[in-house]
Amino acid sequence: MQNHAYVVNGFLHGTVSPLDRGLAYGDGVFRTMKVVDGIPECWSLQYQKLEADCSALGIVCPSAELLMLDIQQLFATAETAVAKIIITRGDGERGYSLPAVTTPLRIIIKSAMPQFPDSNYGEGVKLRVCETRLSHQPKLAGIKHLNRLENVLARMEWHDPEIYDGILLDNNRHVIECTSANIFARFGDALLTPKLNDCGVAGVTRQRVMDAVPQLGLDAKIRVFDMEKLLQADEVIVCNSLFGAWSVRQIEDRMFPVTQLANLVRRVLAE
Amino acid sequence: MQNHAYVVNGFLHGTVSPLDRGLAYGDGVFRTMKVVDGIPECWSLQYQKLEADCSALGIVCPSAELLMLDIQQLFATAETAVAKIIITRGDGERGYSLPAVTTPLRIIIKSAMPQFPDSNYGEGVKLRVCETRLSHQPKLAGIKHLNRLENVLARMEWHDPEIYDGILLDNNRHVIECTSANIFARFGDALLTPKLNDCGVAGVTRQRVMDAVPQLGLDAKIRVFDMEKLLQADEVIVCNSLFGAWSVRQIEDRMFPVTQLANLVRRVLAE
Figure 1: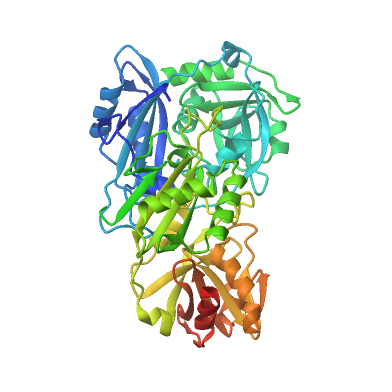
Figure 2: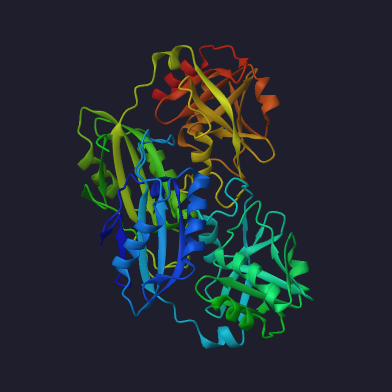
């Protein structure tokens, strides 16, 4: 893969031990963020979430300073690119028991900033509804951990490049998220986003959108709702750390009105 | 880790790319088996299950011949050790979509055969019941994939070395398995093992026990049952590829009679 460069435990072009528990069990967490001129966007929020996710698994998160040194090693000033940070519990013995001493592994991967079509910003994107359901695991809900086979299976369901992402439901057919974005549905001046107590990833941008929308006269609310409810929304937007926010113009056969909301949300997020 | 040796894609002491999807998403499968004099026990069944698990994820499994060459490179004749085989989908680009071309990664890890206490064979083992529940994901049930955080969390629940393993229940409080073994409960001449349609790993040894017990006058049955039912069993045994079968002498506070069943099962499995 020539489109990537990486630093592993501080070493450029470093590699990973076959005994790493991130590989063996998905025993670790990750984050994806935009890096502009060598500085990760919303670094303090991103690091806070990385540390919280590590802590939920009992992994000692490397310091923000150490990760920042890695990032500075990999990203030039005057470039905009994507950083993925992976923290694993480190090498393990055979079996699930934790070794007496673990040394977390840290990986930073740089990849090119995706070239999103202009129409995603102007006209919004099209979503589908995935057949793969997210299972309920309250102990892991919200955490961006390395057990992501459900997302992989869901993303394997379609090949149509016109479809930007797929909506993931849980086993109760409640709306949870997209495979790589969180989702919001506006009903009047209420902006609803799914409750993620049983499954899903609580992204940093989801929280930032919730914090930002009161400025736009909207009330952000965390709610449990199903597809039938979502399809009745006045409008739908999706968000993640790379594109900010986009309108959803279509879900399966249902067309949605596209207003200025996503543009306004992006503007507030950029402030 | 000095207790291990490994071959990665045929290379002794090889390493893994930070872009590997097994690491990024747990996008892969594994198997653990005993290797005696350079030959993996029940190789044909083990390979068959490896290939079926790969296939369930849409991964092309490396050939049995290739894996056997790796094993022969790593294991000397006249030694008994443990082989763990990991197959991942290989390197990926950023994001869940599969790259246009994927080249599966194969890893064989050799580790020392664990020294199980003699009493596990004679007197049986003690189990506890885990608080961590297995979530329902029918698309992944039965598969020994690399998304094993539930097992990791469950194994973190206890430190008492007297407890050999923990029983995992699902969200309906049905008995599923132990963190690293399958479980059987005898009621008269019926030997029940949990249905694994929603979660759990359908081990090769579980299948071999089911196939073998008619010789012992027992009827193997796959059933849905909860802890209350399990605690009423005449006896309980656990099985995996490394130890074969052991009696369970105790689950939490409940003592079980230990008969010759586990010994007989081990004898039949060894034939």
